[in-house]
Amino acid sequence: MPQSLDDLPNELLEQITSYSEVWEKRPPPSSSIFGVLSRVNRRLRDFALPQFFATLHLPLTDVSFAVPTISAGPFVRLLALIRSNPIYGNSIRDLIVGHKFYPFFDLFYIGSANASLSASRYAWEVFGAERPSPWLNLESFACLDMSCGPATIEALQSCANLRSLTLAWDDTTYPDLDGFPNLESLRLAGKAISWDTPSVYWLSMEE
Image 1 (cartoon, rainbow, N blue to C red):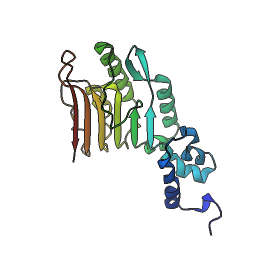
Image 2 (cartoon, rainbow, N blue to C red):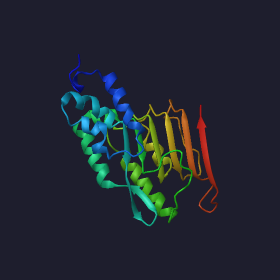
Image 3 (cartoon, rainbow, N blue to C red):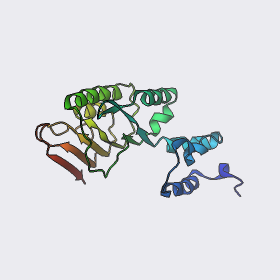
Image 4 (cartoon, one colour):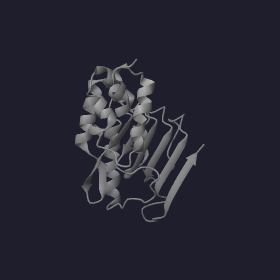
């Protein structure tokens, strides 16, 4: 007869914790059910940490008016944590850059096209520079708050397990998807032709 949560199998713990996902207002990560369980004891920490890190949100900051890029401080701290123990990076399955996620059809306003592309290109180069890559087990990636282009695809080349890709695409060429053999869903939002032709497209390809 189980006497505490420690005595329950992981399958039952997963069922119990799944009820937290239906809350209309979710607590901050540190106060979430997995955040709390990870601080109880080693047994519950081993169960909760992979769940806690399964979905990550990377915050953005503006380098100038309406030119968002990845916030350096939180990103550097995340990389330091991943370097300290491989379990953190190995647990990441879903990564959302910014606060928007699918389905979100309104495009952000770009204050300066050149500044936005330059800032985002540098950010994606930094994002993909870590070796070994911490994103090897990533299954879904979404970024609708920041410009994405070929540099984004290059940064994600280590993600052979990627199944879902959602991007605010700011390039006039179709993305090269050869590096994602398991991709099932691609969603692109952006300006279809060039900055001088502000036609907006939303492309969704799903099996």
